[in-house]
Image (cartoon, rainbow, N blue to C red; front, side, top):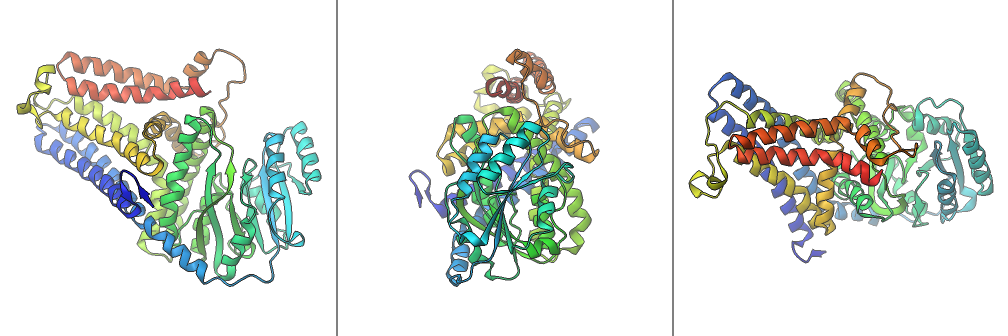
Length: 515
């Protein structure tokens, strides 16, 4: 395949690698520059802080470049596996499970109706609706829907273990050989799912298969969120699958029940899928990723819904890091496999916690006591001063970080607008993700901040301000500091901080516009 502007697929990977390496080098070079011009302890501390952040950022950028490069080779890898598969003559028994918790019955019904269209021997497939709902009217409606669509209705009064607990409750008594899991809002688009997946399990050591997940198209906001998943499933997951570390993403996947029981079932955490993937690896099972879409999830149209999702992801990823470092000694894989899990666990923390820390360190840099050239408006365009102003270097680095996601979104998804949206969303979610990480470290209730819907019918503006007061306060402080920097002729430093301020305002803007 060729991109009309950037060339063929391999060229795209090389461009992507170059972007990530450039970002890593730029950050480390700027750190070195800070040390070279430091004249006092204050600036050495600031330079050290920036260097540590740059090293962390460089590690993730280099890791990302490796993943994007290696993903290019996955198509041949999976095709070679497919060619060796033998035709299936005796189909195994499969359980199809849909876990739900106080979900919209109409959406669930649409999912169940479509799943019944799976092309598979009727006597070999058994359907289950796992309902942990606490609302009586919802339970009653879901039970009716399950009965009408010939799904066995399974209800738990105790939500122990969340989704993992519901699945473990089902699996313990299952006689089927495999279980296929779908989310409550995933509409089947390809009825061949089971027939396509079963042949891969001819490898007796294969524990699970994950397919590509995506959502139905909607507005700019929802489609931009879909790109989050797009980057993961199109580039990161294939590269990880080459290392046998493909992540089971919770749905649109299939698991060998014997393997699941062997490892003790799903670990009962809020992101049971990541824990299950790692534990399967610990038990020396294989995993596989099939880069094909079989179902489309409901688009995320509300910002509060996205906050809820990202809170859960980062809470769980932070829990996973503790679990990983506790058990990594038992891993049989290569150091690259360990790096896959580390980068996955730190991923959202990297683009949230580190982002905020970079912002804070940038403030200290702008107001550093180091003697440097202070540019006024006229001097900015004077070639003689280019490369001398400390903040100017920082501004260039900031511009590069802006351009990277925009360029990559243009390359792979042919949309500059969505690239800017993806970048803005990372800033908008930075504090929510960071608070989730803190909550996980301090063992707070994982559900405390998941629901932020404006059901009261009150003012959208007041609701938006109330729910983003931390981000608003942070942005306001940055704007004030930007003004003071500009007043003292630190024009580039003032612009640098002003850009940061505007980016953190996106939390309130998204909350107001998308609810």
